[in-house]
Length: 291
Image (tube, rainbow, N blue to C red; front, top):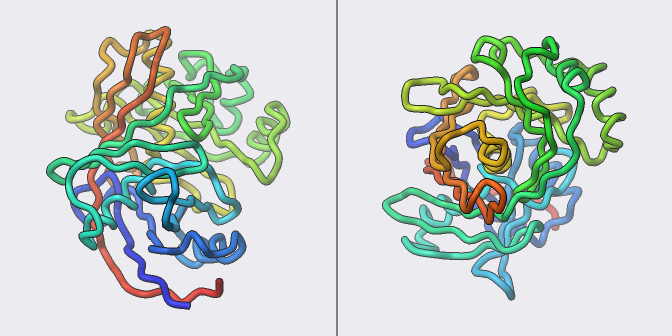
């Protein structure tokens, strides 16, 4: 069966920056197996599949190569950019039904702002356990790593400087030990999100990386859901002075991405996080998939 699709670079304002996502319009009817196979076919980290909703303007399903996930940031930006490209929507407010709940989105002058849900702060993880995943020394981590979710959980890990961030190398044995510590199964992996309090360029305030376990590609160019979780952590921990800042990711991969971030509420009662970026359609067409 044929479905229209748009391939969008999210958190970028020119092609080949930020993070790519293929948006399959009307594809929410597809099976899990077909959706995951499509992600593997694209070699992207994630793809989205849209459909009608009884509780929001659109339903969005998010898939990795290995499983469905409840929410993801850059695919949300990509999905809205694709809807704009096809003139299905215009500027203004809309809502998306996701596995993490209803996500509010606003579009103004091409900037797409999603409001992620209030953070859930989970377990802290020993620095030495997390450090082994990236092949770095534990003292390179300057705050207690902690699991945080604004729709999808990540272990937020703050590093002392850009050089340490650049030196990260994914260690399979270290990741296996980390997963055992957190009780993670092979069906529900959660890699550390590494962030430093300096931008990749003068325009940024933070710079981050997300190294991924197979069958995903080795690294995610820009991670919008983790950006929201990290912003919540940094604000709650007093590691940033202001709740509004510019987050950067992907520069070391040659895919620079950038988001405007605003944490909502006081440090001890965060009510949500706004993460905003642009999306660029780089190709469109039809894909033929079994239902």
